[in-house]
Amino acid sequence: MSIAANLNHLRERIETAASRAGRDPASVRLVAVSKTKPAEALEEAARAGQRLFGENYVQEFTTKAREVREPVEWHFIGALQSNKVRQIAGLVTMIHSVDRLSLAQEIERQWAKLDATCDILIQVNVAGETTKSGTTAEELLTLVREVALLPHLRVRGLMTMPPFFDDPEGARPYFRELKQLAGVVAAAGIAGVSMDELSMGMSGDFESAIEEGATLVRIGTSLFGEREYPR
Ligand SMILES: *Cc1c(COP(=O)(O)O)cnc(C)c1O
Image (tube, rainbow, N blue to C red; front, side, top):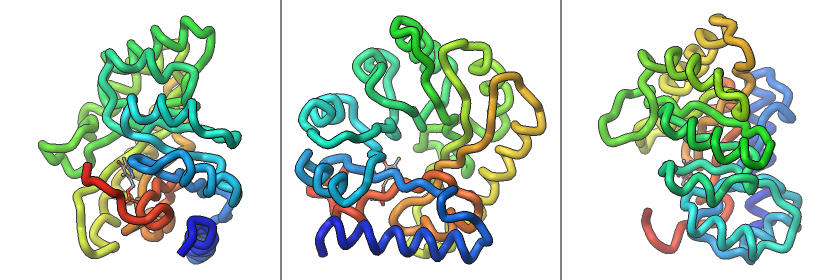
């Protein structure tokens, strides 16, 4: 199937899942995860109406950002080293993977130089897996309070990568937990912090994520096909 056909099919599935949950389909945005895919594939998706792309690797992303000719918007969704933040400053409208204060402080420094504000999500390791990045549920509120004090960052919500399951239902409890944590943060009423965005759900499980409240679903394989090399 072509990328355009995949995209249409995904849009239908997103709409159906949203409707099933009694949600406005427009409240769910598709982040096209384009890691390892060439600029041509992104341009094909862009010509089919996809505007928002998510990238994971700084070097690969900055190269692609120069190559892609269509007007697109970028989110950074991968693990991010502080010493590489400078390279993506101003190129992305949102960073989904902020999981520690030192990283937030570097984003603050780089966006301040641009006199701009960066929207960020706090990545939460809901399952507490030792191999995954993300702050813990216990440390979340403390981190949000600290990040909220940085004037060139705007905390917009939470992101999670649940453990891998073959069964698309397997991740649902973690999606539900992330939504609940967002409620806890929202209830704390921290100045400048909103919890409007929940980035959760990938190719295998985005429908249950939408049913549990996702506003950003990050989908790669179902749109672009299998990746050429494993990451
Ligand atoms: C690769 C990746 C995705 C997309 O995964 P698919 O299963 O290919 O849809 C989503 N989120 C993050 C953080 C990723 O690294």
